[in-house]
Image: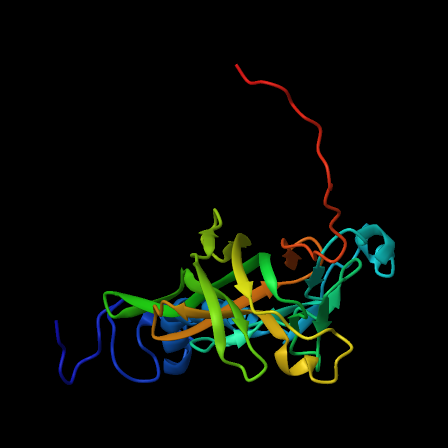
Length: 292
């Protein structure tokens, strides 16, 4: 209904600084604010959750309490072992996406023999094997992470904003490399992160997911450890990780954290072959008599 050149009926809407007699006292800007306040609040709520998700440190200390720490110098306890060494990550680390990075197993756990925990700096660390023969390596790792996106839909002409959550796909590779970095042998472990939405649907619940696998391999004989040329023959065992996100939303952010510490990480090498320097052979054996 229009009323050109006439006064508007009671309760009618009209353009101008007063948009309806029922809204007497409200300016046009105030009425517009009433219309957009709801969608803006939803957008700010989603953005706050998104920004909270992005606020994280590069690394944090990990749980490092274990009885094996007190046995670092007890070589007498592994005197009969041919070779042994164990390492853990002393920190939890955030991982960049779509690139391989070596996990810093930088902390020795228990005594070592024929093995060294090599950590040139705080961002690197691996096991160094100093003997040839048959070796087995066991690893245990724990990953947490997800993708979060900012998405929206329309109710009429009003946009409703919300966050989406999706898993990531970490790949963990155990690599045995020579002194020049060439890969001698490798194995890969694949998994999917574990996430769930809480009952209110406002944020994510991200459960850590653990994996473990082993690799057995044979190495060439090496010079004695005290030989000046020995380091050129040593072999290094490292664990690397790479992950891929699933992007959902207008804008997205992805995170992946690898958890360290004595409870959630390990890299252990055990030499199965034995040195044969002092094997005793019996010159004579007793006569067993007749069979049958």
